[in-house]
Length: 460
Ligand code: ADP
Ligand code: MG
Image (tube, rainbow, N blue to C red; front, side):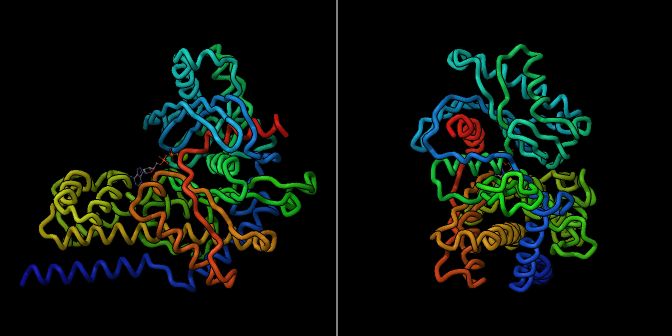
């Protein structure tokens, strides 16, 4: 009897959470229209909500470029260093190393982050076969908002993904890295600065020239796409012919507006208020790897407070104490019906004391609700960009989008659900009889794109 009652309370709670997180067709349409509007505002004005940053990549790779380049990719979680060889015909090789960015560094000075990068490059060059390639040109993938004035110059506008680094805001990311390299006596010239989305886009264009857009779903989330210079009024006609890449910086969609456009729940509001950049990047905070685990944790805290779940651990009282990675592993185990493994993760990683299989099911349903909303919101952004480009692309058959980031790659069923959603939304808008949006996995390619950016200038 008592157990039955407990199940009823749990089901009622789940239904209320599901209702809060679900998005109606009407809401999706509104969000998509607004996204397109905000993107078009961003192309006009530099003070718009979506920054829509021109990247000064005017020569898109053809796939025929060749050469060896050093690459560095600073994400929100990992630092990746590589030696890329472009082989022509869309092929390449990469030798790479990866290091987790220490938490202490994230909350410290920005200059220290650049020093850390240079020191890791120095270590990478200790491999004799790599050192033998010096001097090298370096392509820098920097996944934070920068205002570019040229391919090898970009003013840091601010950080995201819980990195502080206030001392370098307003400074040139290329110069900061170049100085750190010089101070270690390394013969390396930083020749291109690209965002990870831009890098992923350029790399996938190098492999397949039908690629039009890229999306990252990793620690953070962002997207880039190929735009006509004539459609970017804020360039003031300076580069009227040809195409370039726009870094949307889409994580800020829905920021700065007093009306509640984004479908934020009370959990999103708490997460935002307690984050290092409250009121900013609210779309990203509802969607990306850094935050899904935290949304999950906030729901668990509430469920424990309501005595729907019980805990004897302080794991869930610690902000960011639950990682999206563990949520994803748990969800995968549940889908594979490995209930014993589920229970181990719940105890060890979520700190919840499980009393029944119904509770395991409840937790997996919460994971599904949170990850599904992330998919929907991402589909909104992709659909809006596709719509914006429709008149230009009408003769083309497919709109190929390169996707990367651990959330997209690894969260169970994420990639399939997202593909289905973008197709549904594409067709629903009356855009075509058949779905034209094709999502392509572009795993760990952003460094290749940084190399291709340098090569495409040389081979233009
Ligand atoms: P970066 O953003 O530094 O480029 P990644 O693309 O590897 O790095 O993304 C890291 C983010 O992805 C982290 O927030 C992490 O929680 C999340 N993540 C890592 N592994 C998984 C996984 N198996 N499933 C879902 N998310 C994951
Ligand atoms: Mg990345």
